[in-house]
Image 1 (cartoon, rainbow, N blue to C red):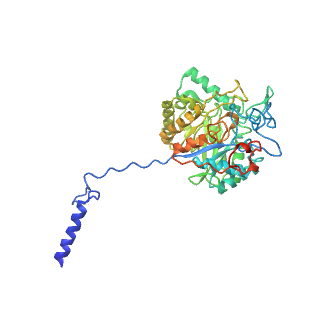
Image 2: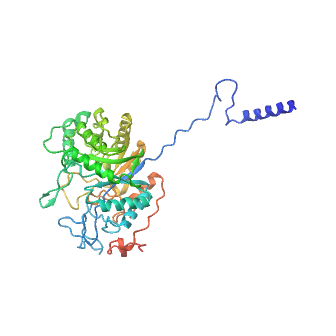
Image 3: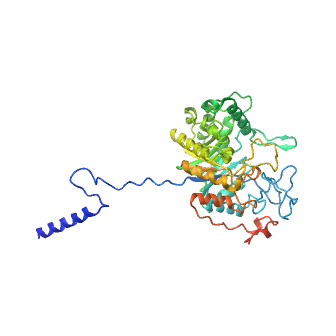
Length: 447
């Protein structure tokens, strides 16, 4: 019996030894001298988000945000019979369902479903005045929760604090300091070339935020505390996300840290801060990114991730430059143990309402080619996140949502989905009551 068992065991061991895919222990501490190569860890596609506006109206109260001096949505423009004279940026742009209402849950649902079909995880919502926007903000969060989508806030009110005024009969940008920063940085590049010292803060006699830093912190914290517990509010690592844009070349890390600390002191849990400042990763001018890395002082401000919201120059840059810039930013973020977020933009054009008077040059879309190349460059750099400027910034021609001006309505969403390896399926359209009546006869499938 012992002999039979011994023969049986020897047979099993011999069989195991003959199986090349199973290392066999040969009496020392080493496994098979030629083990199969370990496959590299699979790279996860970065999570994608888009900046989003919820201030559009098309109801009994009028066409808020579709109006502009000299433009009247009640007037029909063009030969089609459905093109209203609305406030848009690029000539020919027009929302696929016509001027819509952001307070309509079915419009919000359609937008969210289209975003999800393209691979987006959530929206970064511009909050201009959370007090007056409570109703529409709650609607957006509720619909997002139903659709398993996420929302985080951008404190647009803080974004330099300049008060909207009238000049030459036209309203001026709420965040004009953003363009002050663009002009100042461009001048420094021309004067000094690109190097890390470009963004040394300069003295400034104008206020950096509307009110004091503490007032800004109070506002952001109150807004966060009101909504961060909502099931649709975006969290990274369990922490609610807040985006703080602060484009002022006179800004110092110490002032920004004071703002961030002031917010954190009033929120009863850790928060995740995304910062957009002129001094770090100035994607508006690609070469400036190399001259605006994170410094020790900025790394200590309590920010978890740095990014940008106007990557205009990246739209028309050479692909080799895009890849180089994106990789630099990702590597620099990792160096400081920060998450990386690459901004991309389909194009920029505000010629329709501000011809020849724009602080930002037109960045043509090239039929979607510039968009595809930016996505490819961002994916090559392997960031943690990608952020799109913007979902529905119709006023500056940088939107990606469905438009009548593309070769097909969902073109930019389909191109994104393709690059992310996701099959895009057209979302169900909103019901007829949520679509501009002038557009209904021209949209197939409206119920």
